[in-house]
Image 1 (cartoon, rainbow, N blue to C red):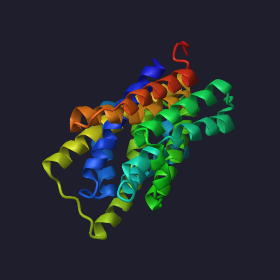
Image 2 (cartoon, rainbow, N blue to C red):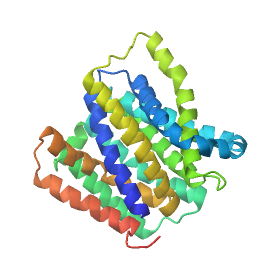
Image 3 (cartoon, helix red, strand yellow):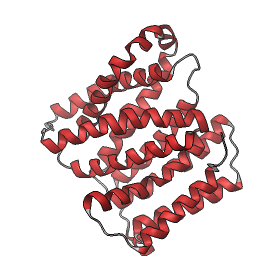
Length: 292
């Protein structure tokens, strides 16, 4: 069940990358993040209000933990991805995103005491090879031509932050229910993001709301925020952050499939064997047939 939750979250997030690329240069990145989380919070609050009221004492006593989780996972992580997308290429973003499961594996070892086994290491190697093959289309000489810049650094930091967020989710206080925890982090993250968005507006970068922009915000607000984070948090609690992180390797694969269906991009043999490598790496690393 945990594997399916992580997989579903990753599928939805793969669409978020396509939306982000489509809005790149047309919508200010911080305001895009702000409207994304506003949408998710507004939709979630009516269903979560009773949980928040019932667990208000637990929320107050864990406010520091919730604030840190919200700042890392809601305020900064996704906003950095939108900012990075303005300065670097999709190839670089896809390659650097593969560091997320590696960060998760290391942090899980440090903070949760999870062992780094030979099976996990082999799974990482196979999945990384699959991702590199996918984004380079089998032409590995393209790696030598990568032009690293500030956007790449931002994406690397974002990958580490998502790993840290996943570790924090795994350490969620038991007295906090899933709904109250998710809603509190959404609200706090939105509060922390507001001064940043205001600064962006005062700097002269104002959002222009077109029909595609509104549709994209609704998608990332409901799908990539509310539904995906609910599924991801559930997966982390069921199978742990490290195993969930390995499934994150499938994100470029699903992005490619969606690009084929939505954008009409062609499929090559490199796409096919890359997909097999990614899936094989995930199976080797996570052992999804384990009933955990």
